[in-house]
Image (cartoon, rainbow, N blue to C red; front, side, top):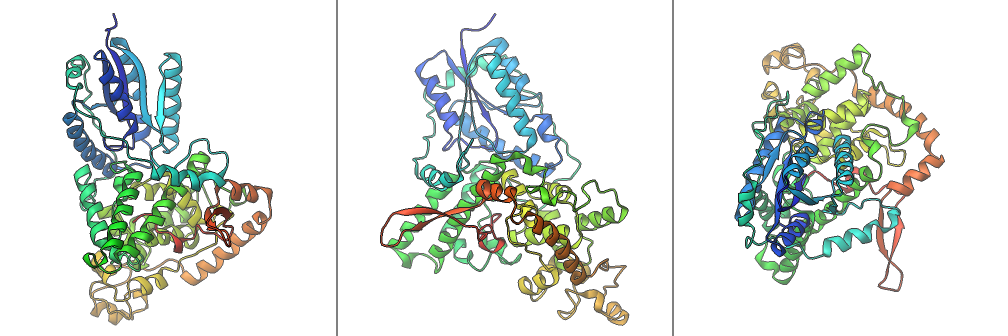
Amino acid sequence: MLSDILVNIVWFKRDLRIQDHAPLYQATQKSLLDKNNMVIPVFSWDASVWSSQDYSQQHVAFVRECLLSLKKDLQAIGLELFETQEGMVNFLNVVSQQYRVVGLYSHEETGNQFTYALDKQVAQWCNEHQVPWQEYPQNGVVRCLKDRDRWNAIWQKRMAMPQVPTPSAQGLNGHLLALSNLNKAHVQIKKPQPDKPLRQKGGRELAIKTLQSFLNGRASKYRGGISSPISSVDAGSRISPYLSWGVLSMKEVIQALQAQRLRIQQTPNRYPKNLDAGLKAFESRLHWHCHFMQKLESEPEIEYRSMHSAFNGIRDEAYQDEETMQKLERWKTGQTGWPLVDACMEMLRQTGWINFRMRAMLMSTASYLYWLHWRETGLHLAREFLDYEPGIHWSQVQMQSGTTGINTLRIYNPIKQARDQDPEGKFVREWLPALKHVPNMWIFEPWLMTPELQQRYGCVIGQDYPEPIISVELAIKAARKKIAEARLAARHSQETKNIVRKHASRKFKPQAGTKKTQLARERKQSDSVNQQDLFQ
């Protein structure tokens, strides 16, 4: 027999906070109006999602830390967070057998194909049980967007809206007694990859601390500091994992940044030089953050299918060739013989983070120099990036692999990048001990040392450090030729025009002689690597 208590379920997804949380606020408002109306917050470790190839143990550990923080915040307002490993649909079934479920509340999610499939299953359950499911946007991504020209205006309007109030504890504690009959599952999630020893830790307190340190000082190094893998560790915001898992809301970050810029402009002498300029540059990156997520929201297939069909079949998607598999393994394990590439992979292995320019270089190396299909390499990097955000990730993976049909082709030379971004070899030596004593002259091309020099500096090629299996120059030349043929076929096709219409960036430009603005299409590839560093 069903209880007389009415239940509103709040489904936490990639929104692990109680601040600026519309679903939680709306559900608790109903509870405050009716003492028989209960709120049940839940986080579901659905196997279909967490067994997917793009998540690793570091994600599990980070989310656990965020959930511990979330539980404390929920307890402070009289609520208990439930975790289930039996699946969201099963959880709904269990609750509905004991209580009258009158509403499901959540944020919209732009996730991978498995979260999309789960949303469909939950929607079906809600339809069958006549339970209204209220979904709320939590960033600038627009569901069912029909006209990309309107996206900028919608984004700006959302970011300017007041933050949703944090629910009050009054009236909610009494409902906890009614939850005693619900058993919380003992959740165990094990992924094959070990947790990373030097990764960022999760939780609201650390998220706020990281954001504040950036707003109050570190952002002064942002411009000019985010390209190098050395300086970007401090110059970058480092809030990306907290944004990816919704520990911070996008609106919250935007408004805190804008408030700080106003304070700086009013009393500039109180703040570090270049702080305002750094925050201004970072604000534009937050706009790009949602812009790229919108691509996956509008076309979920780009997670596993080339955005432009002209690029189908140009690479070995099945990895059936032994040489291809060897290249994949060398790239994944940081054994390419190109020091900057291998050092970046080692930093990722230990920390789960590397700056955006190096991420682009890693993808470029895989897609162009090794000519590997982007899907498998994209999955590897998804597991390696603690801040893996599916919407940004798969859009960027395709862009850096040259399969969008609309973006400027950029092939990174890892030796040139090393000289530009790590001129003294400090970064390479930090992450590759085998090269610790190699002089600057040879540090980025150690295979050029004579056998005598290799012995002298303790780096014997083929023994202490691998030799490259291909020439950078020849590989780049071959890649340009292969990709040019596909790009020629795509250049003036209707499919290309459709992709521009659906995905290309727009921006506001002032009209001559007026203060009004108009939307202008940027066919001149404003999605370029040099204009945005999205993973800082």
